[in-house]
Figure 1 (spheres, helix red, strand yellow):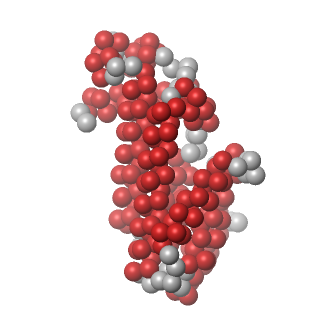
Figure 2 (cartoon, rainbow, N blue to C red):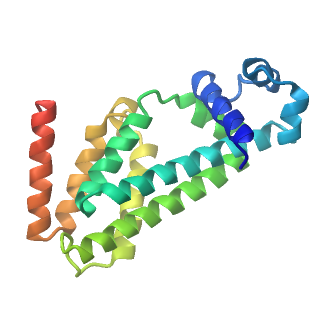
Length: 208
């Protein structure tokens, strides 16, 4: 992707997360970015394609960030906590209208984005399980593919259920509890030691 287009998509992404997708027209984008509508239509045939490219770029940025996390996480268990911190920072300024608008007004883009997100989530969790097994911080007596699917299912169910409030879902401690629950079910004694040490560290940092 050329730098000019990437810059345009990034700025449009910021507009969407500030105002919502529906309320940001092509005219708004043209005015806010200081470029002509003719230039916009050289890159996008319509708003639907623009929305699709915006979210595809964001998805790729997230994947790149996650790859970096994989590189400096000391082990599989700490990797989970680092990823939790990463997403906690990303959703601090979360605008629920974005998901609502995406699903209602750009459903095909929404379905495609959701499908790729779930596939990526499953892939990273499965990779984490295999890493943990190789590092001997996870046991090797469980079906990794099943556990990966189960963990994805838990994450999705949490987001879609009416049991958790939006405030709880946006609080990193909510997903931290899920990590603890997940790790305790599959960790070796060595893995439990790493988990307990990390929880103690978090307790000192947060005072909780």
